Amino acid sequence: MMRIRRQRRAPSAPATVPRIDPRRHEADQEAEAVEKFGASGLPRRDPHKSNGHRLRGELRTARSTTRIEPIEPLPAAPQWIALADDVSWIVVVSLSEEPWPDAERELLGAARKVADEIGGGVVMVRVGVQDPAADFGQIGADRAILLPLTTDPDVLARHVVAVMERFKGRHVFFGEGGADADVARRTAILLGERPATSLHLLSAERATLQEAGGRTEVSRPLPRVATLAQGRFEAHEGSIAREGRRIDLKFDETTPGVRDLGIVTSSQFDAPLGEARFIVSAGDGVTNWDAFRGVTEALGGTIAGSRQVVDAGHLPRHRQVGASGTLVEARCYLAFGISGAPQHLQGVQRCRYVIAINTDLHAAMVKRADLAIIADAQQVMPALARLAGGPANV
Ligand SMILES: Cc1cc2nc3c(=O)[nH]c(=O)nc-3n(C[C@H](O)[C@H](O)[C@H](O)COP(=O)(O)OP(=O)(O)OC[C@H]3O[C@@H](n4cnc5c(N)ncnc54)[C@H](O)[C@@H]3O)c2cc1C
Image 1: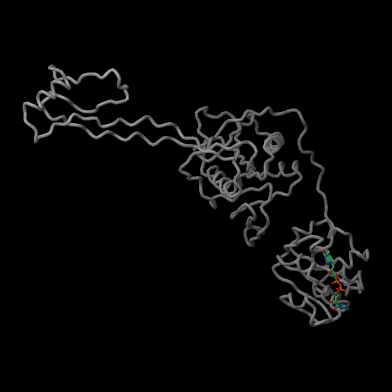
Image 2: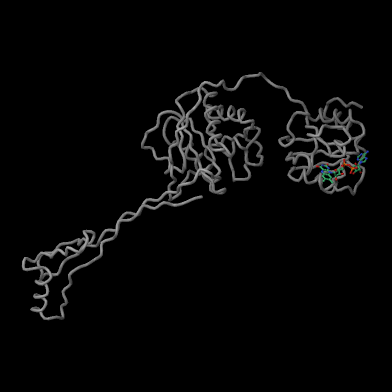
């Protein structure tokens, strides 16, 4: 749905210059010149020719050779890309009061990269009064929206949600500044999404972010709501500007925003498996379930299991790992008594380290593992719990 508009160039002037042939007789030339220009020596006007046929230069007499200055090329016609409304949209939010700070240009550059990969567009959302002549297209935005002037993060988050709904926004990116990140989190809550922070590498499919104060890097599918690390992305430098069309949205400023419900505690069973960093998982080789819970708690892991144990009712369905369960991306996956059927292995292929505890040396899970303990899970679980200093539940 992309089309490029070009401004029409003015027709270039043809170089119709009277020329004198030095090889011809002077009298003939003079007669021809008088015929062409009249006795006054000024060029005759041809009423049938349009004004567009202008002659640049200086014409002194009919006899003298005319000095023609080169015709200056017309400036290149400006171009911009205009998108239809039904493409995928990446929304960029900036709470900055000054126009186009570096951080904002970087946000736009990152959004532009993702949008270009999917053939989509970028919506720039800014707060407050803006210079009416500001050119959003030049910095890479296809649409621009000005939010009503406010510093209330709840209200701002609701406005951003309204923009996301209007454009069916695929992703929304914020800066890392305190106020920006605050609105990002509130927006994520309203959208029912888990925000990702400190993204410093991204494509339309995946993003790399930093965790634990920048000590570890995690790669995950590009989240819907994210804050972007400053200084990691290039500003948009495209030679062809975008449309930068202003959109007026009516914002509802009366609806109540986010309500503080206090701190919610989560257990080993609540933590979403897809985001768990350390998973302790049980298969059919586990028979002592108290020992399994004990070792998971002692190690501070998140509980999971194979389909076999879920089908048997030992764990709830949302704890199942595998092709028909959750695809996990843990840094460490500790598997007690799991054979490693293809459907299960599919679920752990993005895990960094796999540790298998199994009585069968030839189990597929043992082959997949970075470290294996060939032993009875019922003995290993309490031993590990003791080593970790937690309740052994033997
Ligand atoms: C369409 C389809 C989708 C599926 N999706 C999934 C899915 O998403 N996730 C999933 O997990 N499965 C899935 N399955 C099922 C899968 O094929 C296997 O049946 C299942 O993963 C086996 O679970 P398990 O390893 O716990 O049990 P088993 O295959 O019975 O393996 C038990 C393992 O425990 C070991 N063991 C036995 N005793 C001990 C002991 N005392 N100590 C240590 N080890 C011991 C054994 O050596 C064995 O390796 C799917 C199947 C189908 C057909």
